[in-house]
Structure formats: C-alpha cells, structure tokens
Image (cartoon, rainbow, N blue to C red; front, side):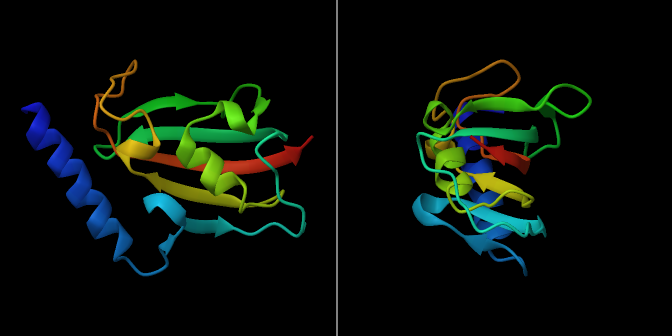
Length: 131
C-alpha cells in the first residue's frame, strides 16, 4: 500500500473508532476506552516515574511491543511519546485503558521497528505505580 493511502487508512480508522460507544476523547486527538478503573486519586505529572504494563499494536492487529509476561515498564513520563504523556496524566493507579493515538502524537511520519510511518497506535496500558 502506498504511504499516502496507508496514512489516510489510519486516519479513517481513528475517526471511526472515535464514534464508537464508550470511546472518550482526550486533548490533542487522543482517544481511549476504559477497561478497568482504579481506586486511587493521584495522577502522574510529566516528571513522575510511572510503572505500567502495556501492549502496543497497529490498526491491523500487529503487536509491535508488550511488557506482559516480562517486567513492567518503569520510566519518567516525559520520556514517552506525546500520546502517552497526555493519557497517563489523566490515569490513576489501577486504571487500565485502551488508547488510540494518532500518528502525530506517536511517531509521526517516521517508521519504527514494526511500526510504519503514519501509523495510528493502539495501546492497552495498565498503570501500576507512580514514583
């Protein structure tokens, strides 16, 4: 598939996903669906170190990365892609969300291993801790 067609396919997928029941919008075009809500009230800040399990995939279902079955990710929030920064600041420990991140809030036009440039990213994220 040509790059331009691939980018348009990803944008259309996200527009359709945004219209689904239960899908909520965050700033900057990031969408999410709540899988499980945590009980905590504290949200991470961009400088917080978060601990999370996650699974990342493209709209065709290809999983490009996952921490499940391994050690959870522990990283400073501001060191992640913009879509994660926007979403995780709204999450609390115990939340598990499915995120839908437009390419501009992910890796943009640049390809990454297993992720073509222009990809809408889908992440299942479970926030385990805030440090």
